Amino acid sequence: MSIRVEKPVIDEAVLDLIGKEFKFDHAKGIAELLKNSVDAYNIEGTPDEQQIIYVYLNLSKNNLIKSIDVIDFVGMNRAKIDAAFKRWFDPKAAKKISNDQQCNIKTLGGHGNGGKFYMREMFKSSSLITYRSAKLNSFGFNDLKQYGFDSTMNNLEASIEEAIETSGLKSNSNLYNEIKNILLERKRFTIVRGLQPKSAQKTNYLKDLINKLIVHPQAKRIIQHKQVYLLLSQHSQSTRLRIPSLLPKKGFEGPFEFVCPQIINYEGENIKMYPSGQIKLTLFTSDEPLKGNKYRGRNSIDFLSDVGVIANYEISKIGHFRTYVYSEFIHGECYAQVMEDEEYVTNDRNEFIGASKTEALLSWTKECIESLCEKMDESAKKEKKKINLKKTSELNELLNRWKNRFLQKLIRDRLAGVGNDLGVEGNNEETWNVDPQKKNQPPKNSQRKIGNEGGNKVKKTNTFPEVRISGMHPDPFSESDDPFDCDQRQPAIYQRPIDFKNGIYWINTSKQMANMILEKNGPDSIRWREYLFQRYIDIIVKEAIYFLGKTEVDLTSDSVMNEIDRVTSEALDLAAVDLNSFLFEEVYVV
Figure 1 (cartoon, helix red, strand yellow):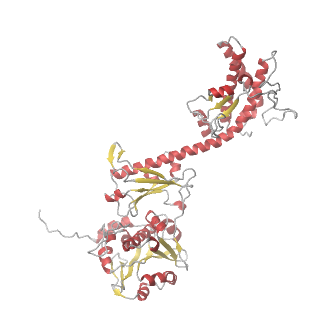
Figure 2 (cartoon, one colour):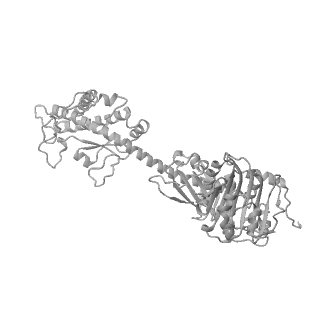
Figure 3 (cartoon, helix red, strand yellow):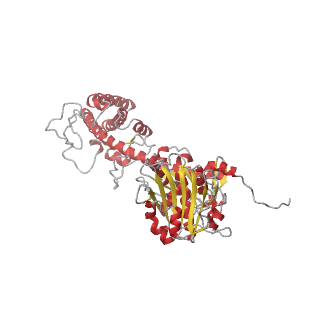
């Protein structure tokens, strides 16, 4: 079919329809205007330190915003307005210098719609007032959303002083005094002015607007690297906007970097992504959870192109996390220029266009966040376990002393008639009560003296065993001071050959039951004290059997069973007296 190509005719109703998507809150709208200013500076080749932007807010007595000015010092000529600002839906609008010229640098502006739609939709009236090359122009929207040039400022030839007067800059004395020197030096400016801002998520009030602006994805990188100043009508001096810094979580200072694979399996489908290294995710941690108004917008991932943010996702919207609480401590950025190259970027650069590749990218991002969450969760559990085991160590010391008291009795009874040696070649009996709730105390002249002719050689048959807590106490046979850890698959009472030889037992706190009790009930609970006590009964029985084997020539299964019954019974009877409070009081303090 042979046709004569004509330009599409677009009815203004289309602008009303699409404009509904651009009913910005004012923080997002100002972010769009900041992007336009930065693009203008970048096209000029202006260094970052000379890119100055002012946000001027005219306030009522109750801090309601009456008008908003965003000012830069680049300026536009009539050709630029005709080629770029007047045009809708042009993906190259930000790069246009005139109808016949455009620059080749990358710009923050996407399709040239954000700033215009903000001006059209969110104010009763608005205007772009710009001065460059001794010409003053004003182009804007009236209260009917119609746009065009102001007849009094349509390529008006004027000096910089006349332009300042005509544009209304001089009528705002605070603003004029602040920027006067820059205006007279550079002799060009652009003001985007919106009058009577419409209500939008309370950002037509000062505090809400500023809190949202400094963390808005499209604004925060500009605020970090450019000179963006805020000036209020009732203040004589401006304030430079800055992004509050976030301290990293201790032990997770990062950053944590991930590279997207070339193929991602998403919902059973292998989705081809990009060549290796084209998408890189960098995650950071925060010392505080990023929630509430203070950290609004910080708990998110910025997806970046070469020049700025092309999409932003709150982490909570990326997916459900098994360790959700730790996802609140994470923020990050993902370099993904390829997503812009392949046109997955939406008009307002808020989120990506819905597609299988987008879903696969977000799914991979979620997996990376989750892997960091799990590491943080594991670290927190270890830290909590340390605290729990520190309390357990106090309980263990008490039980160690009680165990020695019982074993003294056991040895004394066994050796009745043979002698009364106790401990390592010693002859002193230890007599005291370990229960702090009982009033009777050891005699003043009592001493804990186990042996009076001790030597360097340790004899297991003649010493009381020492009980240690895994994950809490160091290995006595290692040069390291780090806690000795048992494995979950090892016995609840664990001994290596070297431990057996030297009379050391480890209570294995890595066992699932031990972990469950500590997690659900805590180290101060009766359940945990009872668990420790049962392990001590196990140790006492083991020692009794070992001692029995040393003293009886013919050891049978019956004699072993009888010894277990006898020792267990005696130990429980003694515990009922000595450890009554330890085993039965809800609150117990060592």
